[in-house]
Image (tube, rainbow, N blue to C red; front, top):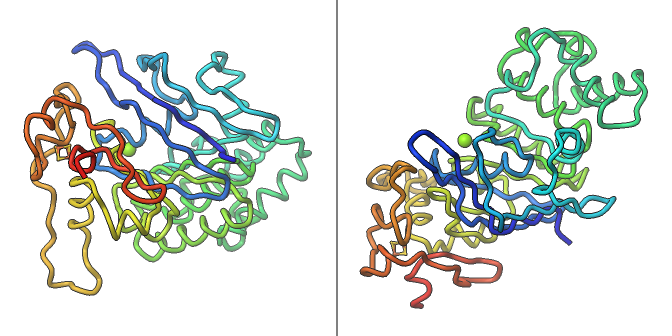
Length: 328
Ligand code: SF4
Ligand code: MG
């Protein structure tokens, strides 16, 4: 039983320069209690994909009619694409899906204390009384390792350090016990020690609440520590997905291999890092055929430049969209 099914998600932005394809025929599923790492360089469409799940993209976003997002809640399946009224979307946002961002200040209203904002959110999305909401908020702040939580409850976000704000944001996002947590580069701005603590905390909470997590990052190393499975995106396309150990040990797509070669090796610090040559093309000039062909060292001929590669099975629950795999 899955928690969310995304099928053929395609999204373009209307701009003065024309339509820009940001997400191109993306499909994936996530089960309750599963952590999926969504990986790719900036501009690969990770955040836009995640925001689509909550319909948080700006008004110039146009979804293709084939795009389907189904959220399986206790009350039954919700067809996210068909939710048009803001009120219907509000039921999904914050209640069933929570999102945490790289910059926690974005999540906190500057003129409200952290505590009153947490309470307000709980009053909207749960049946708790104000008193219960306050108790739960303080408990959650404590759970994320904020000492003296009842004092911090009464503070503004700007009175907290960056690491503490990040924890407070996670506490707020988790207090409604969402079914799905979307974490968009949540640890990128943190120092390494706090980063590890936040990752451990998220893992504990997954185990306790059984929620699904989509963890967006450009750092495959963080994914290796956090996720059960991984999906790699490039220029709006999903190009490889599978169990995290399997994909990291046995990547098939030349882009995934490039990302792995660019990781520092703990057992061989002398090994030179091999960044992927070239830059990600502008979405206004998306390459035809395989979107990666302008940077790929393995191009096998015109097929790469003209034909979009389809998925091939490259292991158990592991699939790759590359003509090399289709050729075996
Ligand atoms: Fe490289 Fe061709 Fe595979 Fe694309 S389809 S990744 S260009 S080999
Ligand atoms: Mg992003």
